[in-house]
Amino acid sequence: MLFRVDKDTGTVKPVQIESELGVSKPGDATWEFAKKLALCAATNHLSLVRHFNGVHLASAAHLAIATRNCLFPDHPLSRLLWPYIFRTQQSNRAVTRAQMVKGGDFDSVFSFTHTGMCNLFSGTYVQYKFIVNDPEEDARDRGILKGGFDTPTQNDLEQLFSIFFRHASAYVHIYYESDAQIAQDAAVQNWITELDGSIPNGIKAVLRGGITRDSVSRLIARFMYLVTVQHDIVGSFLWNYQLWAHKQPTRMYRNGNRMPLDAYQRLVNANFNLNVPRTPLMNDFSDLIRADDNKRAEAIQALNDFQKGLKDLETKWRMESWHVWRVYPKLLEVNINA
Ligand SMILES: [Fe+2]
Image (cartoon, rainbow, N blue to C red; front, side):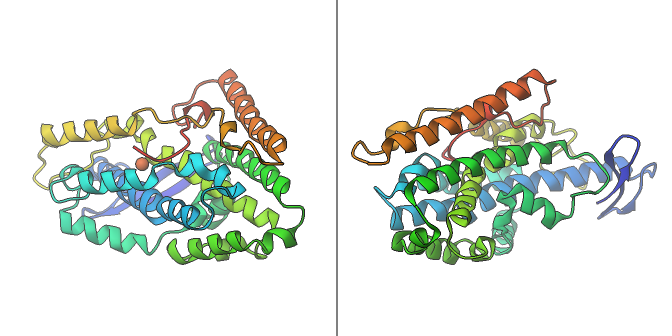
């Protein structure tokens, strides 16, 4: 799909789609059908590749496992990350059993056969890019900065990320007085080695300069962003779009048949599942700091400052006009368990 910048509106407009129908351009007889096909591909990609494979299996699962293996239960970073990894494995297991099996939600609702879906998961798992959880790096990687068009969503995501980074950095600086101290922490070294070995394509490349307070803070901010913002964008937020199956179908038939009603009902059910309330990110997590922790007061202050940062952003955005695509802090959930 090819987009071109429309300078008058500061947006991008689709100008060409290549599909099984050949090359389609606006005004062609195949254009509307080609658009629907492109949206169908996008909604499959979001649900299967970005959401379940990317967030749940390729990254958040490894975060939960490595944190338990290397930092559990009382390392300060384990205490910080606990809400973000709570019940990740349990949820991944439940979804794998209910949605990935033959006749499960995935092959009943989306475009792939069971074998096709398994091949899609295997093929895209190894292509996973952890950097999607860092909006600045991701935008650079995708080449969308200074493209001559407005990027309101991107600007929002950068603001959210900066709150995570400030928080992680404040917390890390409480427990480590120098870069040398964190670099010599064997538990942190093991944690990073395990994450690097398990997340497809590793994380060492994104650490740059090795283990420092800054690089570890940025890594933690990316994990927080992964299980909150990224997970909601590719998960529960689909509710706002995916149910319009006449515009953005999860599957299309060559003979022109509509999506069967039972498949649509399963899609509604699956989307409903994604919207069952989980623990919100805007919440008091100060109980997680140990009572005998000699940095307790400072750590709780850092957690409270983070909550204040989220609250201030929520207030600011709520005073502006409402946008369906906006990731308001109050909507965010602290972990990915279903
Ligand atoms: Fe999810």
